View 1: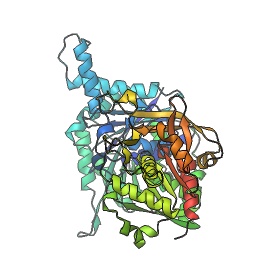
View 2: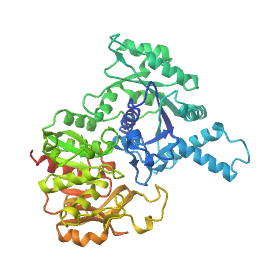
View 3: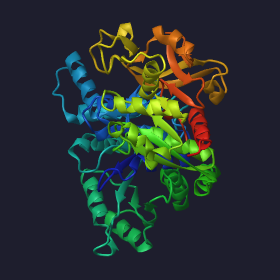
Length: 536
């Protein structure tokens, strides 16, 4: 039978609940247990797909095309969990399902209420996440989004309260809090944690483990005080201080607290100890780099640190693979001009990456960047919209089509190098025109992208609406570009590269979604390799 570990958060948001959950899961996976992960989000949006990245951060896409919360990216990077549409659910999805059931008459005319109808649907989805994992599941981690005390979270908390009542010996509650150090008082304060746990207990959930985030390790007396006032055993208060250099130190740090052993003891699971030498070896690499690389990221959401989370992490993974440290400099394309490229801040960048996005804002600045990289032979990596930038700039700068554009930016252009497919044009739903999820691409032999992957066929995830216009293929290839990857089923361009450039590649898919710290994505590895060879 599957075990269920529920993770809740208190005090405030963004204390690393998703990261910590993923790290604990990785330790249990290292013990030979089959792990599955799930995120329950309290917001009423049906999915994160149409949410502003400034508010919510990136949208993480799974192989089956589900647009999900960014925490699923953490789950993927830290574990081998099977992620799909069943591993993320929002209040919007829950309520939408219940209302449809009521309209269909499934409730036989009964009054539809939060309890039991909403909570039953939440519990059904938790069971579904475990049942639909093809590998079989020993432990399902369920992270509850938001913070205890939020009105939006109450149905989810009530659902997991009921869940533990139904199978008490197979459930574990982990509550994560923050223990601040107040400079004015020169001491650590446990009161926020006490109030957070008190709120949790008031709705019937008693935590089995309390994980305390803090800037530094907590003294023994602080942990004992928290245990006393929160009603848990002393050894069930675990501190999780800030990682010195990288989030990938978290598994090794948590291993020292023996939290994985504690979880197994509380659930009554008897398995071998975890062997995490691979995490320790990675930490050693991170702390002792042999090289250094500076990469510029040009995107309109750079002010929000989580908007390009998977891209940033994939760059870190590739730098670790190259025994290199990395400095990522972010640039707002609206602030760019030809004169800015001469500044030390930009000119020191050894490679430039333009990530995905939607909308016209910052488009002209990205085109300037692509032109500068093409003319000055600077490694350029365009992802999704970044590939479309490469294509339009090439059409203008090399083919001489000065009005070339994407119909997303200018639907009146006479040279629509990037446009909607004909079957998309009559769809009005914002998400209905999207190409989502994994699909195969065939790589052209002897191309740069073929050499990076080392194989002919790849499977990568997509999240975009506009495509390269195939009527321009002949002109592009005649003037020095190469369509180096194609989706054969619909004859779609998946990658463009410039032949006489050391490394200028644009891909329509999102390789960042499949990069892991212990197995960096080959395209990012190749990009970092060529960037390292570029001296400022």
